[in-house]
Length: 367
Image 1 (cartoon, rainbow, N blue to C red):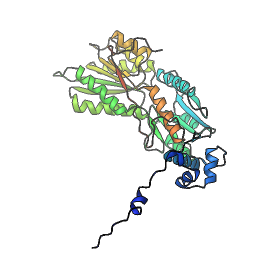
Image 2 (cartoon, one colour):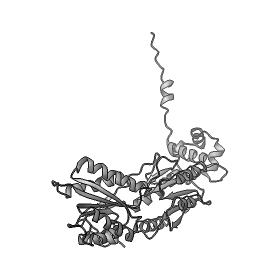
Image 3 (cartoon, rainbow, N blue to C red):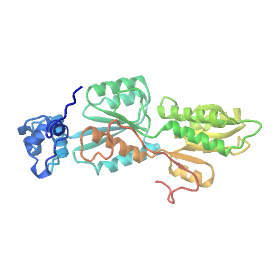
Image 4 (cartoon, rainbow, N blue to C red):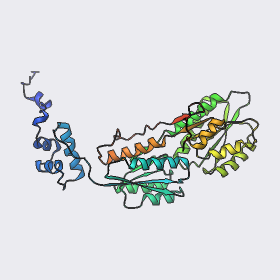
């Protein structure tokens, strides 16, 4: 077969065109790359309006790629209203998160505003009703993994109102992203340390788990992680019972006391939720013959003090401040804000959890 040699300046130059110096880039160049007319480029760059968000983004992206030498306007002009929905604000985790949303609202672009909806109850009905309220362009929410919540997220996505889940995910939905820790790894970590801290004996020890309820994906994944790790690497520990305390310290205390009477061999307690006061109160009742290892969640004033006095062994903090920052960066990226940080689709949460023991506590007790 006869070979064909391309002459200089034909095929090769078409595949790898010489890039113009930035000083010679014109509006026509930007228009050609963006696939619009020069008049549209003029309207975008001089902020004359009457251009869709999609076209504005294309023109600005083309101008940046070509290196157009001029100050470019923000890629977003529309005001974006975000509804942050959190339930049971009396919980320290929710207090930390609400405070961080307040702090971040003071630093954001002036065209994005945050409204905080704090609910007394965390039922699927109450949360879904709050999610569906009009007047908001996006929603950040801590919600249970429930069919009603699934249906609400589907409706919001169809309306072009993205949902970012926070703290606990609602997978298998049309939500835009999840901002939070890997709860399965958190549960595995609790079981890992519990297994290493509990010496193997001829008679297996027992682990009692306290949780809110497994309707929240976060709690279900933590318990699944704990169970997987116990089975894989701590055969001397047996998961005796899962106690559902509803994150209520008094209910948790009473139910744990009953569990201790049923399982006097309890050597470890894992609290996957927020009832840490109830755990310590039940431990101090003296029902168990030996103080158990107690691993829970969140760094609060109470867990800080409990770690220092030896009531608690470890606490796994889920970095709520970083969750807030990631959730907002995702929405800013989605809506085309210039200061969106490092969030890029597909949005994957890399928020870390931090394990605190008595030796690495902050010097000051958390507020």
